[in-house]
Image (cartoon, rainbow, N blue to C red; front, side, top):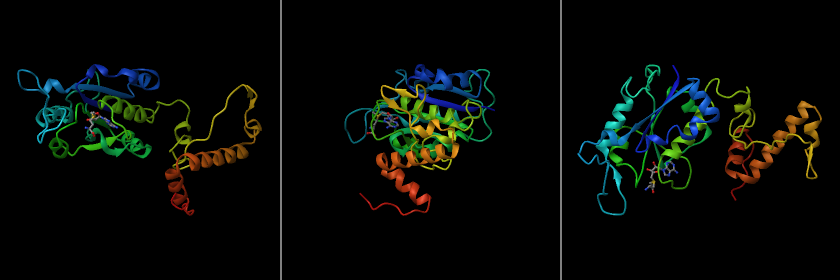
Length: 256
Ligand code: SAM
């Protein structure tokens, strides 16, 4: 049973887009995950196939209608529905349904790990001013943001979330251990940004690689990497650094 993503969107032709390339694309072709997109407009019931309307209370923009979005969600949640041709039967465990919105909980590696460990996701992509609040509540959608900025639609956010999840699926990343070593991923460096990387040539434009990395001394290399990760995190992300210190039982720095 492969991990499955269903996208509810007004622009199904945007998918797989970048997710059809490179690591995620190869994994898709290998059947390590499945992707299907549902056109929200296909669930409109009037003769104009309208999906949106003006906001109650006035104001600019349009809002996606709850009845149309709900019908699309019902189709995505129904077992076996919307499965792409040749895809395995829908997962017995229900997939979480998420609404991508700047108002949501910030996507982080902990949430990515949680979602990647489950059966897959159903992702609702908003457009215009967003989605009628009642369908978000009625369907218990988890609201997730990819950052403190406003996109014109949820599709790029869905792609970001899926890319982050798919690379954690079994067999997707080649090098064992690479997922544990990187930023936010633990491996003894819980919540730290990653140390810098270097490759050949050993000297480039007068800039040598830190000598310890050429020493072949694994313990020294590990110590250097840990120290570099700590320095970079403390400099760039005081929030992560404070969390790391707390997790390590060390005193958090005074608030800045
Ligand atoms: N009126 C909304 C607000 O101020 O919060 C913004 C709506 S935005 C123009 C249209 C759609 O893009 C949203 O419904 C959402 O699906 C998506 N979107 C925009 N920014 C996002 C972000 N940072 N994270 C996730 N989705 C986002």
